[in-house]
Image 1: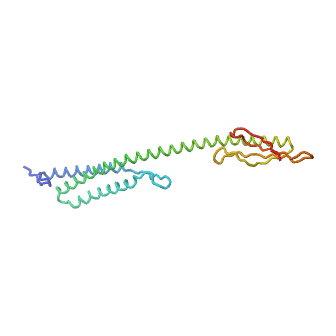
Image 2 (image 1 turned 90 degrees about the horizontal axis):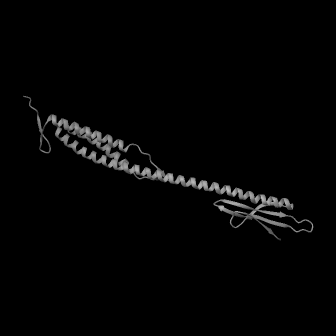
Image 3 (image 1 turned 135 degrees about the vertical axis):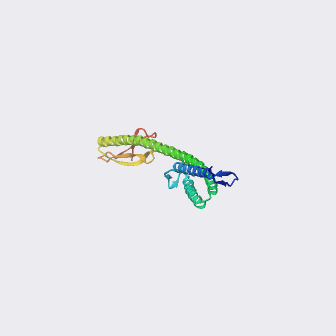
Length: 220
């Protein structure tokens, strides 16, 4: 008959050396598996900035979880070193470390959910900002096209008046604002005195609505 050596565990139960070895192997494998899962959950993540400030504040928690994961692996190694020859003590320490690893895994999973939600929110904000920039750019292009057409009409009217009266024209005030830094410049037409004829002046500008060319005769 083969006699199996027995040891009394910390909780008072009696088990064989082979049972202890299996428990220790199972616990060590479980901790290694959980640690690998945590490693994958944390992964690598980009630091996103907006205006010089960290948009998503999970980086600090990420570093802390990484630190705890390193501490877990170091604790397993120290437990194996301290418990050489005392399988019961090693099993108890590994059981405690497995519980800690499972808690750390839950925290890491929660962090990952918050992180991905933060990324989705950041992407939503960036998309909204991009759409707003595109909208403003399109509106400005339309406004500039309108400004160019109105300015061409003002210039054409001034040119025709100058050609018909033998005068000259030049840009002057008022500048009619169509939008931010988008204006139509008025034209001043001057027909110099000729013989008994007095000088003639015309102001070519836009009407109050800013849609039509308005010509005003000015008398000295």
